[in-house]
Amino acid sequence: MKKIFGFIFADDMEFKPFSEYAYKRGGKLISEKPQNVIELETENAVIYAIESGIGKVNSAIAALELIKSYSPDYIMSAGLSGAISGVARGDIVAGNSFVECDFDIRPFGYPLGKKSDGTYIHEASEELLVAARKLPGMKEGRLGTGDFFLTDPAKKNEYKEEFSITAFDMESGAIAATCSKYRVPFMSVRKISDDADDSATESYREMNNLCEETLTEILIDITNNM
Image 1 (cartoon, rainbow, N blue to C red):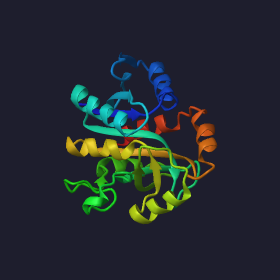
Image 2: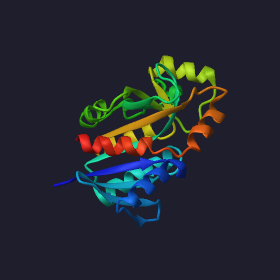
Image 3: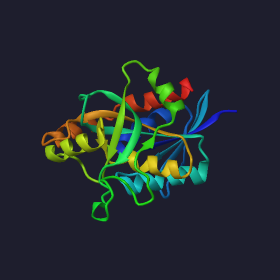
Image 4: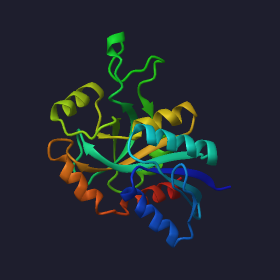
C-alpha cells in the first residue's frame, strides 16, 4: 500500500512550482477552502499538497487540515529560510529539530521558547531524515521559527546563542508542534535565501521570485527514498 504524504508550502510562489509539477503528471486541485489542496499520486506515494499561507497560525491550520482530512503517514514542509549558522545562500537544509524562538513567557520563570506544558524542542522524523540524507549536498540542522521576517542581527545572534539554530523561518516550528501533538512524523526542508540581516528582504525577494522547482523535486525525491 502506498504511503500518504502531506506537503505544506507557505506562499503562492512556493506552491506554484509544485502545482505545475503535479498538473503535468495528472495531479488535480481537490479543495480551495480553507486552503488550496492538490492531490498527486506517484509510483510510490499519494501526496496532498496544501498552500498554507505565511506564518505560524496559517501553517498550523494547514497541518491540522492535512491530518484531519487526509490522514497522512508523514508531513513535510518546504520553503525559504534565513541563514543563522553554518549555512550560506543556496544551501538546502533538512531540519532535524524545531523550536518556536518567539514563544516567550519568561516573566513566569520559563526559558525563552519553552511552553508551560513543558514542550520546547520538537524532533524530526528519523525515517524522513534518513531519506533526506541520501540526497547530494543536503545539510542538516535545527530550525528556528517566529512570526516575523528576521532582519535584526542582534536578534539573529540571540537566537543562535539561545537555541543553536541553523536557519530561521516562519512556519516549521508551528507545524512541528502540531504534528507532535497528533503524532504524525514530520520534517521541514528549507533553502537558504538570505542572511537574516538588513540585506535579507531584497535577497529573499530575488530568490522567491524565481519560483524554482528545487524544493518540490527534493520532497518528491524524499518520498521516493522512503
